[in-house]
Length: 141
Image (cartoon, rainbow, N blue to C red; front, side):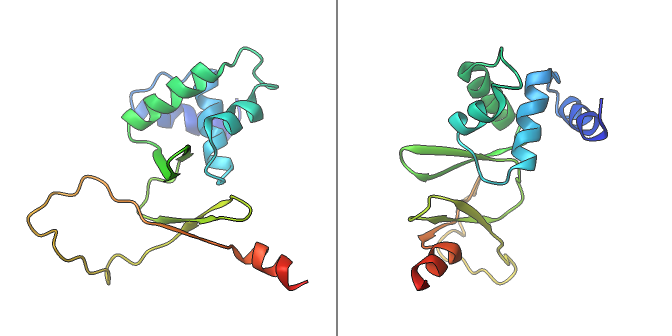
């Protein structure tokens, strides 16, 4: 077992998740590929390596990871659910041209929110949509 697999195994155990081979590979994929993948993308990427993998296993594993709060759900579009292993406070930018989702880092120290003094916030999501720099560059040529 490689060092990264051992670290993932230990991390899953620390979060009360039985570290099956499929769970470790799914979590490893989320860490390595910061593309904010969908269930289909994760399944397609891993099914050749894990022939016994099913989409149901991917769904169930992601649900378990969400329940244990080791990943976050991203729903920038109503019909598209993506997953992110980075659970730090950050936002996302979706390019409406190529469909890629980028991380956006936020300085929360200067962020002023009004009207929430009497509320308890359980989660927050900040999304931006537009055209990414790569797509803008393609239009220049």
